Image (tube, rainbow, N blue to C red):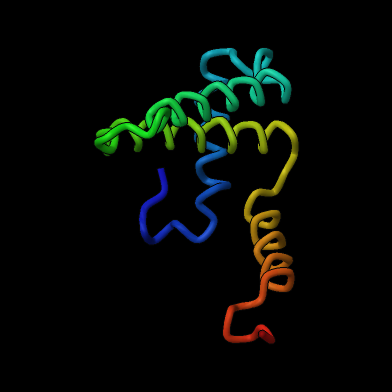
Length: 109
């Protein structure tokens, strides 16, 4: 897994690790974009359950972290199988959003 010195392209590093993990278990035949997307939706649902019905106390941080990790794992695996360069796609999306949504101090009232 990436450490601080290797974190410049951590999505690609994590994708390689997830690919290795899946291949060692002969899972790529099951890791179709459709299957991974449905699994991702399921994990987002598990994360949402932690906040469902506006609980009076926040969910335990370790549970939130576990579900966020599951969401990221499936999103990165989906992107890998779908041929998406996550680092490039995210950078391009941030650049588009910078243009679409200028900072408050740059807006005319």
